[in-house]
Length: 384
Image (cartoon, rainbow, N blue to C red; front, side, top):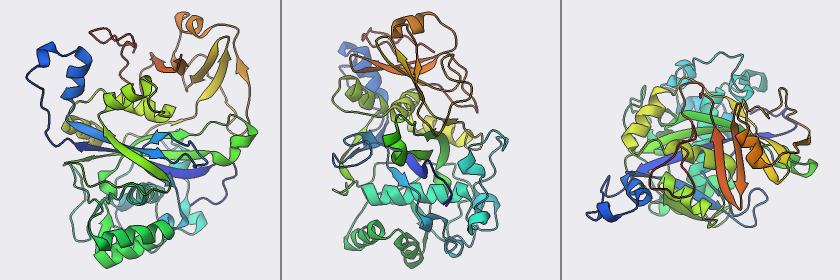
């Protein structure tokens, strides 16, 4: 844990995809269905989204992936005993990311030994994501401490909260994250860090001085499960949950039924490339050691609205200030800014409807969001 950070805190989140009960089944009436409904039925998996409590001080009522702030216990040296069969392997058997350290996000390359921890950041952030997922949804991603997990080439299993013992452990971990270590020792299991594949890294923008205390440098991971485990919200931080296909979640947002923050919307749009859980798992597994960029959106005030710009966009500042709010503006309309072309990597809303415009080649063997025309034409029109 890096206790020297002044402007944000480190966090981890998990995109959890799980096979649907009935698999990839298209109804017999498919020829009479709209293209959008046919495509939605083609997804053989769903993604877990949790609705934050309206009392939450950060993004109340938003639908987000499970996750949360890193705790000092996630970097506890007591994990060495839990992972004793793997502690001598590079990153506990996760392998070494090929991305040069000069372009790697600071949260991944920080030397944790300076803060007294022998737990690599690559490991601790995954422990955080798994612990927070357990606290918020009751889903536990662990494997027996005797399991051979040097590679995670197949879809994995997860355990939903089942029985009084796991309910008791969940409550204890919620009250004291250190209990996650004790639980693993007693149950002779280890967090399945090998099932989590690096997906992205988002830094909360600084919109104003009042938002400084609510900023997070968040590692995004993805894990693919054979089937949906038992899921239960905690009725504390999380008010409810939904398992949606990526397109169902996006449709909920576009119809203004729910609110999904920009990072989640961006990554759900990426998932729309993959209708098969096996295809998604193969993609995320194969690019697991490629790395990622840290993205922080910068707001540009257009004549008729706000544009969230991302690195690479022509409107994105060359050296954005990561700590102080700065005003960027244009005297053009949003439409004019899009039509003038150039390098586009931006997000905005028109009448509450979210839109992404991207024409850049993704780095690190990743994939751009799948962008479809919002007018509900019978066929998609990619803006990539």
